[in-house]
Image (cartoon, rainbow, N blue to C red):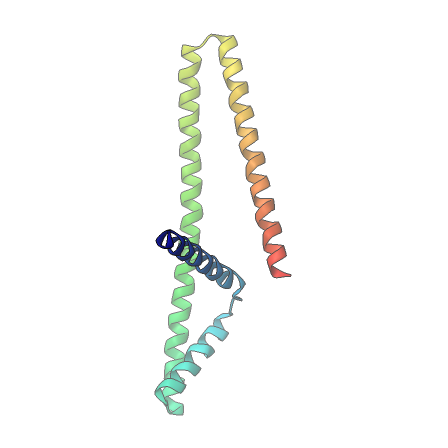
Length: 145
C-alpha cells in the first residue's frame, strides 16, 4: 500500500513540475536582437574576464551569430507555412478524388446525403477548434493576470 501511495505522489509531483516549466517558458519575454547580443556579451565578459578589445570582437561575433540564427528561424517559419499550404492543397486533391469516386458509386440522392453529412462533420470540427482556441486564449489571459 505504501508503494502505491509513494508512486502516486511521485507521478503527481513530476506532472506538476512539468506543467510549471511550460508556464515559465510561456511567461518569458522576447528579447530584441540587441538585447540578446548585450546579454551574451556581458555574460561572456564577466565569465572570461575579457579586455575591452576582446569584448568588442566578441560582440561583433555574437551579433553575427544572433543575426544568422534569427534569419534561419525566419526561414524555417516560412518553410513551415509553405509546407502547410502544400499539405492543404494535397488534402483538397485527395478529398476531390474521394468525392469523385463516391459520386461514381452512390446514387445522386445518396451522394447528396453523403455530402451533407460530410459538411456537417466539417462544421462541427470547425466549431470545436474555435471553442478550443477560445479556451486557450481565456486560460492565457487568466494566467497573465
